[in-house]
Image (cartoon, rainbow, N blue to C red; front, side):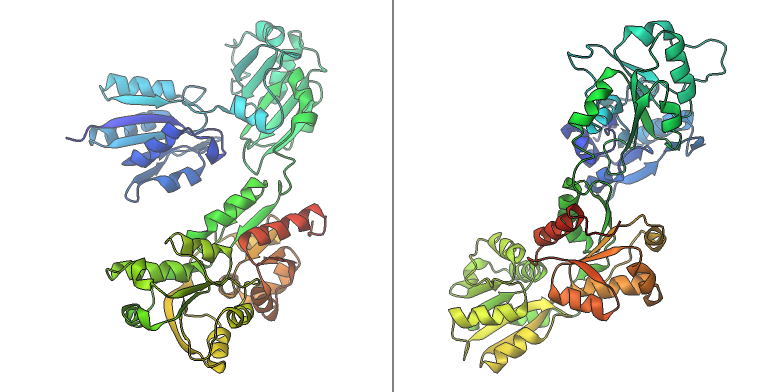
Length: 510
């Protein structure tokens, strides 16, 4: 019989990579996920497809549910004999009210586990280049709520002791009370020259850090809005030397990825590693062809072909998936040579334990023809091309002209996606987007259709466009987009390198 369980999980401070291995397993195991405002929603992608998601975020004065209602919800879902994962920003027991939730579960005889998380007081200054302890500066470190009401008669914080008795002080949720906090510290003996850092959205690409002293930080940080954490202490001086996160080459840049949702992650991850904030705005989806019969017929007659030519990883996956569905395997491809455009397509083929016999140096159809002419006699050879429904006609036409026999069939089709971020146009006009990337002609066409042709002129004046290759560039420019970042190598790593070169050389639009 299934046993109910509640996991109180610390999701970390914002960077989804900072969740613990056990925390990730609890997300995967959950029937119900109850999560807070500060939880990075990317973590929810690993949940089971049929999991129930319940948002209970608290933002400023706006509470989706009050704490008592959240407690009751945990009990209710657990009593339905479900596995409940309660995701909380940072650590559940560090100003996260996890102790209150655990007590309610205990009182209702509901089994629970607490999975610690990395708390903001440690991770956020780390990402801002500030170690909270350092033997040359301090060996003491304190965590304090900055949310205490300054109008109440008596403070629960012993300001006299913490002001001079602890080296590094971390104040949570203290932006509104920053004048009160700095005043209390200086009144109780801390020098007005003590270094201070205020860090907003720490560990994320939106991170912003303002530094000053107890005497100046209120004025310097007046534009900072929650969520933010305040670090007080001499260790703040080390930021200039240890600031590794905000100095990454794409930090502060927001880049839109228009690839299909299935393929966006690889690209987004590479951009994120260089510090970019990435918005996944898929304009295409990969779907099965309207009829599978031509592909089935080709696979059942596979030994009549001398060459398999793959022009994309999608073609590879579609072909081999159908090969296996028909009860066949790679032994049925004995003697057939394989051609692949690009390293990603070649890697996809290698997953099926096949070697590639021909890979052109340039990743366009024109180069495929030239390379095939070097490695085989095209006259009389039979080529199978499992491709997209909108693939260019150049390759099959050229092979036919050279005397080859060609079966050019639709192995998959691309359809327009319905992106969730409907405010992208406003973000572009407001200057919140820096670069929009295109990895195929279909991503260009669909992007323009989604945003509207009438907005093209405005887009060119507010954002840069980056293209993976000459065919994509040609499509974009024919449709009125000005491509200013072009990959020298027509691959995702090549496009990333082109973006890096543009940004670091200062040629990108600011």
